[in-house]
Length: 260
Image (cartoon, rainbow, N blue to C red; front, side, top):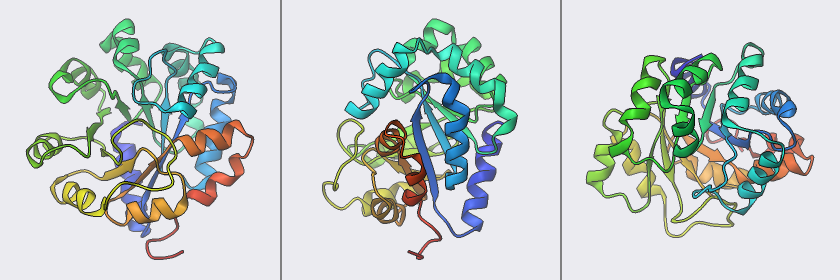
C-alpha cells in the first residue's frame, strides 16, 4: 500500500471517465476509535483518496473548521504516533489509499526515519507537510522514498512559471494546487479565473494536479476539476462528519466527466 496504490487508484478513476476526489478528515475528531468507520464511509461515498490530517497545536495552513476539529482531536489525546498505529491496525480492511497531512514539528519530534517506517507499517501512500518548502524536503523525502511513499508538493496562485517548472520536476503522487491565497475553509467562490492557472500546471506536471482549499460543493468540484485532474475537499467534509451528516458526502462527489 505505497504510492503505487495511489497511482493505481488514479488510473482507475481516469479509465472510468471520472475526476479524482480527495477527502480531507481530521484524525481523532470524535475519537480515534471512529477512524476506520470514517474511512469506510468515504470509501462507500466514492472518494478516491483520503487525506488524513494530524492534529497540531499550530496549524498554519488550516482555517477555523479544521482548527476546531484539531482541537477536539487534541482533547482526545490524539498524536501522530497513535494515528499511525490505529491506521496500521485496520489497513487491510480499507481499499482506498491514505495520505497523511501533518506539520514538520511532529515529524521532527518523532524522527523522519521513524515517521517513514511507521507510515509504511500503516500502509500510507503519501505525505503532505505544508510548512516544509521544496528546498528543505530532502530529510523527509529520502526516508519516505525508501518505502515508496510519495511526498506531495504544493503549487500556489503566486507561483511563477519558473517555480512551477521546479516543483513539477520530480514530483510524486500528485501536485496540490492551492486555489486561494490564504488558509483552508469553505468558500462561495474564487477570485479570478482559475482555469488558466490550473491548466498551466497540468500541462507541465507528470503527475495528476488536484485543486484544493475552499472547495465545498459538487458544482465547485466540477468547475475546478474541468481544468485539472480533480479536487481536494476538506472543511465541508469535516463539518458534515462532525454534524453527523456523513451520508451527505457522496453528494459532493462528481460522477463521470460531463455527466451531472
